[in-house]
Each structure stands twice: as C-alpha cells, then as structure tokens.
Length: 410
Image (cartoon, rainbow, N blue to C red):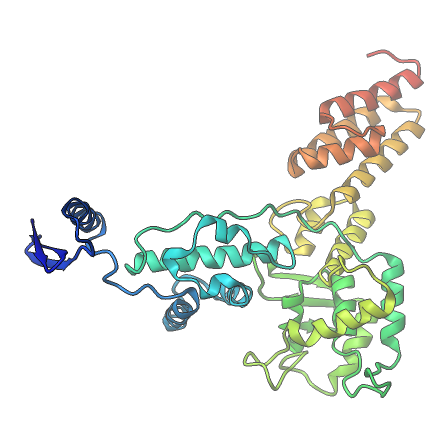
C-alpha cells in the first residue's frame, strides 16, 4: 500500500487480490489519510467493495426490481402465490411511509419500528415485506448487512357478529341502497348480502366464497363443496341452509357452471374483497356496528353457534377448515361453555361420575388451547377472580365446592 500527495490532498493506491485500487483520501493530513486507507482495505476484506463505489437505491426504486423478480418466477417455485400477494399488500402500506424514500443502507431497526398499519396484523404484513426486501437486497449484493426488523405482537380476533348485529345488517341490506345524493344505487347490496349469509351459515372464509362455482353446489344434498383454501383442511363440505339457498337461487339465472360471483374487471374472473369492502363499511355505518368488528367476524359467529349446538370440537374444526382446535373460537366463548358445564355439574345429584367427566373435559380442552391469557379469562369466568390463576387450582376449587355442597370429602 502507498500514499501519494497530489497538491494538498493525499491519495491511496494499492493492489489487492490481483486488482489495483486508487482513490482520494480527501484530506491534506497524512495521519488522517493513513486511517482512510486502512478503512478502505478493511471494507475490501469485509465485502470486496470500496466504500461509496456503488450507488445504493432507495426502497421505492428497489421495489421495482424486487417485484419484477417475483413476477418472473414460475408458479411452482417459492414463494407461493398467496405469499406473493401478501408482499404486494405489505408494499402498499410501505410505499406511503417515509421509509420508501430512504436508501437501503440508511434503513435501521428504529426506522422499521415506527411503521404502523391499521392493525397489528397489517403492521406485521408491512414489516415482513420490508424484511424480505432487505434480505433479497443482501443476497443480490446491494446491501452488506441487513438490520433487524422486529414484528409487533398480534392478538387473535375476539369479536363476532352478535345476533342483534346480524338482525340489523339483514334488515338494512333487505332494502334499497342509496347514494350520498339520496338516489337509488345501481349496484345495491349485492354481492355483500349473499356473502354475509354464506359466512354466517357455513363458516367459509371470504376468499373461499369469492371463488365459489355453481358446479360445486349440491342442491339436492344441501351442501357446498370447497375445493381449496389456505390449508389442507380447507377442502371440505359445508352446509347449504335454506336462506343461503334462496339467496343463491335469486342470482343463479339458469347458470350451472362458472363463478357464482363473477367479475368482468378482475383478472381472476371472480370478485375480490374490493367489491365487498365498501358495501360492508357502509352497512356497518348504517347499523351502528363498532369499528372493531370486521366481516371475518361472521365466521366466528358460525364457529360459536356450531360449538354451542354440537359441543364437538373436532367437528367444528373440520367445518371451519382449521388446523388447530379453537383456532376460530374466542377465549370468552370457550370459557362460557366451561361455566355452563360447571353449572350443570352443580345441579346434578350423581356427582361422582359428573365430577370426573367435567374435570377430564376441562383438562383436555385446556391442553388443546394452551394456558396464559386464556387461563386468566377462564378463572375469571368460573371463580370471579381478577388475577391470573393456574388452571389446576381452578378445577380443584370447582370440584371441592361440588363435593362440599353434597357433604362428601376427597
């Protein structure tokens, strides 16, 4: 290595790995020039590039390359189609934030921590997209290192469409839909009203309803076949109730095949959530439903009703097309069912078998759901306590109360 002074400015010149490197140290002091030369060599040893010799793009500019790469991939190569769509949704949030105009090497963990969406899940969508884009930039040699992008904590949906909400929604959507100027809307409340009925009565996911085909409806058997979804369990039959049947027949118009909810604008040929979301928001405003309630909550209502009607966890899981028990049930719903079981236990005279049955039932259910926040809710429901309780203590106290009431001892 060597330093050369040209005028008042020092320059470095050396060969490394068979290649010659030259540049200015931008200083007139020799000691500072030596430090610059050492830093340049350290950077070469680290990633093989001179500092500042490559222009780093902004996140917005890099997004073009990233999504062009996604589009160029074959359908059978990862990431899968739902994941690619997930990144597109995440980018729609990212591109509206200041981070989109920042250079990739300027983005830090602190910058990522201020990204905020409409919900925790929406925020994590953007953060996962950012993390994947930065990781891909590192793989392509654009970035030397990738900052840590931390996700926010998500809580499962615990809202459901209550009976009064359902009544109000069906009453509003049964009448005409008016424009802001008070004129009758050309579109009306379809397809929202039919989709709401299907979700309430079958538990299908919105995307599964959008992809419904006439040839998958078994009118004589009262069943709807769903061929695919977000998991393997999604391939299933769901009930076709009388009111859903009437709503579907009203829009059938002699069709025996093709999409139930076709769209001339969508590339897929069927409608998407965009066609339904505006109708849902308007209906929610007219009925006074809280803003925290989303259309997906209709699916929770189905799971709650199915659980109350059958008490069969596995049957509800299969009907919902889920992988794990209580994936769609709220903690309050399950706790209420336990409370009802205990009430029945307190009313019985033959307590020995009932105590064993209810104790086993509660333990099995809790093993499936897990402890933590659910345990606290369950303890509050059963024992009226405000602090966290261990499940075993809750069960022991319930059984003890029953035995003491009947004059028995353990």
